[in-house]
Image (cartoon, rainbow, N blue to C red; front, top):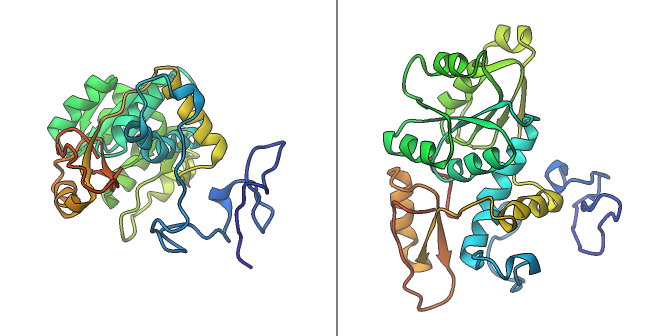
Length: 279
């Protein structure tokens, strides 16, 4: 049986779309046909949409709003999955495409932020975005530095780095009864320190984009002026150059492709990335 989602099939009580298995959260539906994965990811059947009314009078135009519709809701849902409470520590591993907006959401949610990355420039950016602690992820003592700086480890760890070693490292920086949310999708596997997970009662869970209620809440932060969008735009024709910049680690934030024909865009590799997830 294949699940189909329709705006008429929404639970009024929860605001979540029902799935053929009875799940109310699209991200938990094993029967969903997702555009770009289970079905073609092209523009067939696409509709033009107007921004929510509450955003029309703000600076959040279509390009900037796309940052929230992609990276924003992904990281917001991931942070919620860590169940971290205001005043507690969230460690964010990876300050590339998702990391900058993740730091902003964490701060807006009242969390204290520690950030890790392999690039010095991105650590500088993380500090400007609101991270209290920044650590070079390449250091053999990186996890211990996080544990020391946070007084015992992060209550929640969000992994946005597309790197298998970052997954194992995340488990070592979580405190007792902490939660690690895995968002990035690097290929392969990663070793898990069984004793640490069992004895420290660490929870490990995956997190993907999120459902409509998550998106509504994610947009709400932007509407209240609690977020900024680190983006740059580029014409679709420059897709190869943009992906080369992503692969080389030259992009901080998100790059938004302008689908309008003839648009020249403003490709600035150091300023942005909604194409791919930076390291």
